[in-house]
Length: 485
Figure 1 (tube, rainbow, N blue to C red):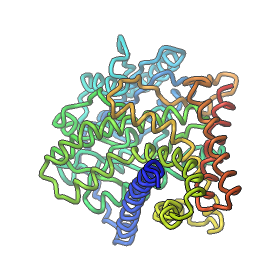
Figure 2: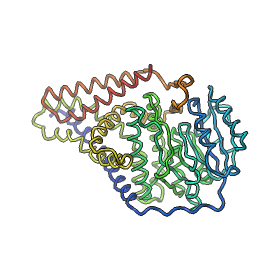
Figure 3: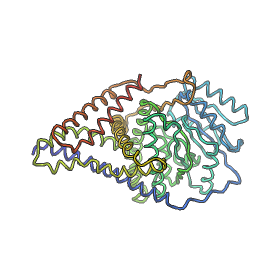
Figure 4: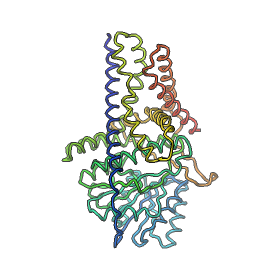
């Protein structure tokens, strides 16, 4: 047998093993999370006799559709006003500046301590803005909300008491809710994926004592923890994940509370979703490059080190999926030509086995998020989610590779539509139809060709994989073109 087909099958098999390992990790977190939910509920925390000083930071950049909503929501927080400071960290260059200034002036006129903080430049992007804001406030605890969030009035009264139980608690993170989950199929798919992270991953890691991450928003930091961990760094696109690991390596504890929900807006168009995905996946790779060494040199238990490695390398799964996808089409022809190695090649058809634990993982999250929905709705929705996730593999794999190579890219924020009147709503765009979008369309054709070849050769082993890939890449291409108009 020629070397090339053997090499193809070997590489494909290694990819399958990686996927199986990734899925097994999610299965373990699911088991841990369900054990956490089965445990007796924690006792209610006592109301503090004396509340500490809290600063609420709102990092903004060109968010005229939602800027008034987030400022008004934080101004309505139920907290002693003499102990509350709201910082609108506004790096905007458009009408957002005037809108923010007007709302800040309005609430300041009501006696609220609220500041409109403007910098000369946008150095360090969000991390730079957060760091700059700390220099101008005296809060002992720092709550952070992105512009698309709408915190409930009791948010601080429900989160701050956790810090007063243990002076080594550095972060209290809450679960993201979804303001516009039912707006479109795209938003429902995003909510499906995010619920798995917030209802399973974060819960499982917390229950087992593994490292978790501050999610960039919807949480509160102890200022002493930020300072002790070295403050906000600007060398990754996920400053939240970076600081989370530095803090936990310093011995700080993180608390995660899924019962406290911070509602937020999901990206409703494809270019906004892609900008968010690029930032998350590239930033995770940058953070892995930065922290894998310190994690393994630390004195953490082996189980914590292994889970931290799995956590930091999560985004690398897109590279593996993309490699598997590209190899799968020539594999159809190799299987058709070398019948004497049919058993060997059949091993490459069991890719779905690697994804089987994910069925359990996402189903558990789906039931927790939607306990009243009928069971029959789950299988189709899960397959659609899996397909679209695969369709993002090219975009996200590129981001991961850039992160591992240390290529610096600008922080592109995720545009939000908000609920402003349509006549005044601005359509922020993060990019047009570039070569990458065209390549996604070509790959949809490529995988459709592999699907047809499998049918032609009466070889249906890779048919499920090629079906998911074809639908996923076609959907990503369609929405990218549609939303770019």
